[in-house]
Image 1 (tube, rainbow, N blue to C red):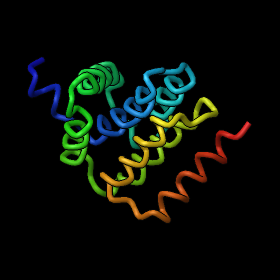
Image 2 (image 1 turned 90 degrees about the vertical axis):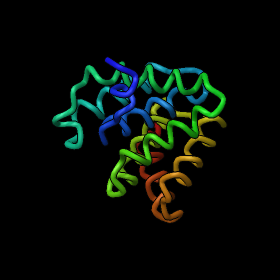
Image 3 (image 1 turned 30 degrees about the vertical axis):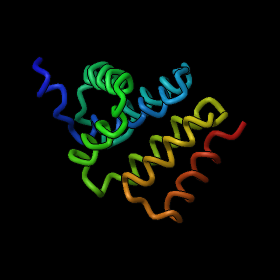
Image 4 (image 1 turned 120 degrees about the horizontal axis):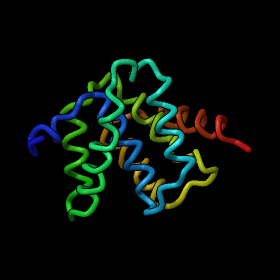
Length: 140
């Protein structure tokens, strides 16, 4: 696979990339977060035609970008170029679910969620509702 091919993202790749990014943001990828990502890919209709083998490719791309100084900006550039606006709230909901999966939100995760809200131009009220739903689903 050439470098250009690996950076051509589908809408589903964008969703996976954001979930991986949230999980990796605190430099501690937890099993509960990985299970949340795998479960989302396995059961949600948006992923019905998705090649699950792409998860490892997309994950490696995110990890590689996170090692670069402007990697987060590059990631958002790729995502904004490939993710249809109609999936922005879906992307944020999935990111929130991954962040909440382990029962605690680290500062790095909160900062990344704030950046995702900004980059995807989500209405603050809609974002708050999505966050509240994630909190409600993951309460212990």
